[in-house]
Image (cartoon, protein in one colour):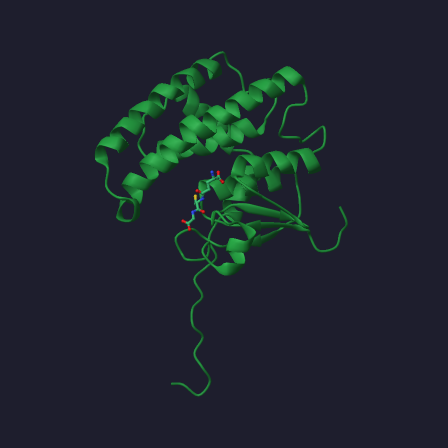
Length: 226
Ligand SMILES: N[C@@H](CCC(=O)N[C@@H](CS)C(=O)NCC(=O)O)C(=O)O
């Protein structure tokens, strides 16, 4: 990549999904421009952004004339195009890659959808999506049940979910686990220890900072005013 203006543009900050995309950019040490728009502010509904992502969702990555949405897809794209053998986030061996695919789909479908869509929407955001305490309680139990195999997989002392190196499956899982812990969902100790270990990675800490919403501008007093 040239030293000139970065060609990667990442739209979105402040959510667990935008964090994943930022985390990948930092794991791969890629220069990028951040467009720090946020959900539920109207910024995802503008004509400009709707042209970029008709789904009106963040995160979205632009790489020159190529646009890609969905956090797991963004992370995969960045690794496949810009990753090196040392820092790639996707396994290269066919069987490891098959396991990685299985975990990514499982986490996105069973864990992310349960915790972010059902619990997040109908508890934290119930003023927008409606109060549904039974759905929230049952999603919490479902999440707990789905974590059993995660806990079993991690309990043989392994550091990472797939093989013996860090991959984007760890990024997806960690973002779900951190949210679950913060949300008071029972998370087995082996999963909490794992999430703490993964979240200690320098790129995660950098991404957390990059994911902060921009400060609300304070109005500067106009000249001549008291
Ligand atoms: N499956 C998508 C989910 C993206 C998504 O739902 N983004 C939400 C915020 S977390 C959003 O942009 N909502 C639009 C809005 O509320 O304005 C992903 O993983 O990227």
